[in-house]
Amino acid sequence: MTYSSAASVNRQRFSTRGQNAVSFKSEDRRLGPITNAIVLLVMVCLIGLVYLTQVTKTNSFSYEIDKLETEQSQLKEEQKDLELTAARLRSVESERVAKASEGLVSVAPSGTISE
Image 1 (spheres, rainbow, N blue to C red):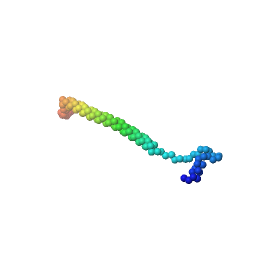
Image 2 (cartoon, rainbow, N blue to C red):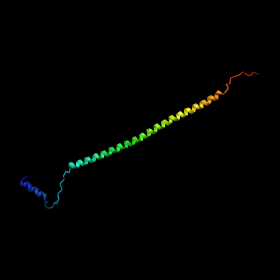
Image 3 (cartoon, rainbow, N blue to C red):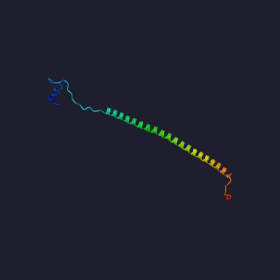
């Protein structure tokens, strides 16, 4: 830097007559590497939290599905037992009817009545 340019820079710092003493310069503010790392870490934590929430929901649904499947298998076993009981009762009833029909006399036409 030369003397003349250095002197002009120093003069620009101070206000001239009729101007404000404070000058605003627009500066581009950028995040530093530490701030970037912190923001990245926070984002990873949030994504991990969302992932864990979804996994927990899935596990709770699988427990509910297992419970319903167990209930379904118990109901199927109960249905089979009831079908067996119904079949036994029908066979007992049919035996009763068969024994009763054995004691009956068969009716055959003995002849015709003539006048």
